[in-house]
Length: 119
Image 1 (tube, helix red, strand yellow):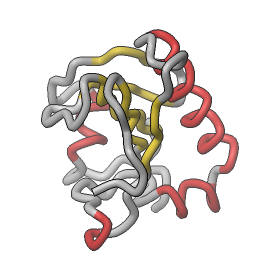
Image 2 (cartoon, rainbow, N blue to C red; image 1 turned 30 degrees about the vertical axis):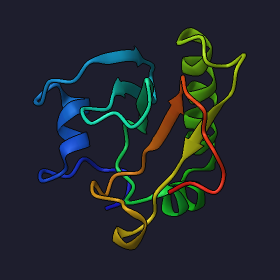
Image 3 (cartoon, rainbow, N blue to C red; image 1 turned 180 degrees about the vertical axis):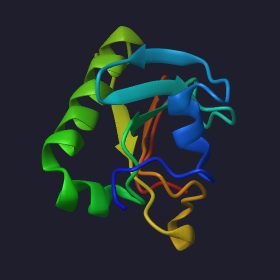
Image 4 (cartoon, helix red, strand yellow; image 1 turned 180 degrees about the horizontal axis):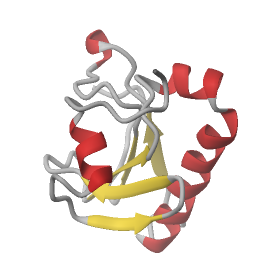
């Protein structure tokens, strides 16, 4: 069921404290933690605590939670001091787009030039 923890989901395990992560912010509805394979000097994942497979299903089923996630990404950017120079928030949706953990998550990237279009 959407929103319920999934036993085989890495990010659900991080939310539950079963898998360690370098948490930078923990709110009632979201968790932000450093990516273990950073693609920029600042690379933080911001996830909803509730399980949704991707950003589209999150936005459709729980729009307030999607808004919480985006707000927290902005707050983390400010805390990481990349808000003044610019940062990127990326949602990969589907394996063809590079999504490897099927729990909605935003990549917050900053701290280096981020050219467009990306790779």
